[in-house]
Length: 234
Image (cartoon, rainbow, N blue to C red; front, side, top):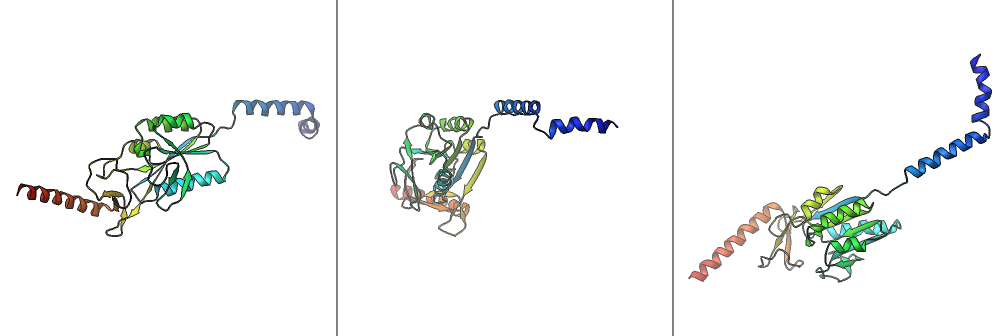
């Protein structure tokens, strides 16, 4: 009998245009929307690997895909990198995208206003401040895509790259092909005499090698140095 008497009340409240119900529902949704606005979630993505592994190519691909989705993007590169262009990020395959050259990582924070996606190429050339810059950009809700060499010509972790890989939400390690044996390569072997860590160059100064060939090349270099010393002593 209770269901018989309750049914008319249920019908009037839920199945008719009840002004009281409409007011309650409207207030409930408006309060919920005001308390939890939709926000972009910032992320840090790192694309790393040796020279000639396609790091910049992958960075450009991701940035152009964001542009196609009509997102506001900005890409930065170190001002010292003028191998192909002063104002563009250019891959070894000559794909390119307009960029902003900067002298320091701190400049990126100032210039990355009102954007949704930030790309950073050759991150290994920046100082350690780039780590905090990426953190702050991600905290703003910005998607940050960083590309750079994970190791220098000696096979030693390069600059801020290890720390960037540690704080990243996603790490993609690209591989080149070893020019000596055809296996996957993840080392950048320098073919000219120089002890500078930063030495800009392309195929005339570097070649990608696998671990085995890289170690063999290091032995060859030691042998050449010892041979030169021996000749000088004669």
